[in-house]
Image 1 (cartoon, one colour):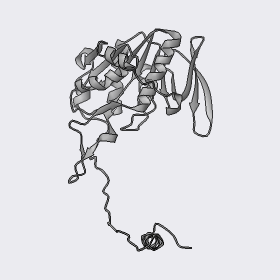
Image 2 (cartoon, helix red, strand yellow):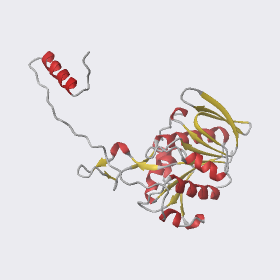
Image 3 (cartoon, helix red, strand yellow):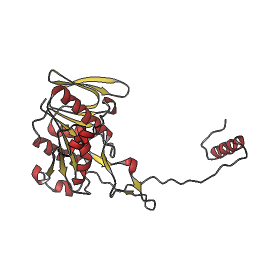
Image 4 (cartoon, one colour):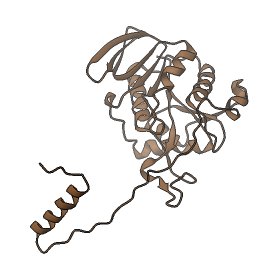
Length: 264
């Protein structure tokens, strides 16, 4: 095994995302970013392949200088190098543009044996990146993989099709997207966290990839009109009673009145 490339996306940590109550807009400035759990599972699988087959594990991200901090976790887990395609702070690109940028970067990282990614990112949930990149690179692709092995220089994978499992094989190099069931990511040790800062994080700018800057600055194939938190209106009904039974009776009455419960 020569090199495994893992696609990572650092997105806003939704568990810590705050919303402006007056506009219902998310407050993204200064929000903490992290690598998605599915991407971590792709990285974990790459590290296990490296432990069995040898070789090098590199991560590849489309982001900005702010991506460096989240990528330290990937380096602490065991990745050898991290690469960032820097599109600038606050710039948003759709999956088509992202896949074109990734293709250009992957060609700079040739030779490689395998590209791994999560089946979807936790912010867009599109499941498009693996298939799009495989198409651009003209490589075989396997999606929704829950088990992965390399036998005789070929990939053997079990795909999760919800109501059935499918066993498939493919020649290397290939692109594989993994599901949540494939593994449980390791937790880096304190020593690994300290060593991560000495590992290289290499930045590609658009010009160095021979990609036109207009691909980022121009019109995207998807337009995001607005992002707002759902509006929740509470009626603030307080149920009080002298006894538990009385309180329950009043609560049930309100739930029936609101149509939450149906009386039969």
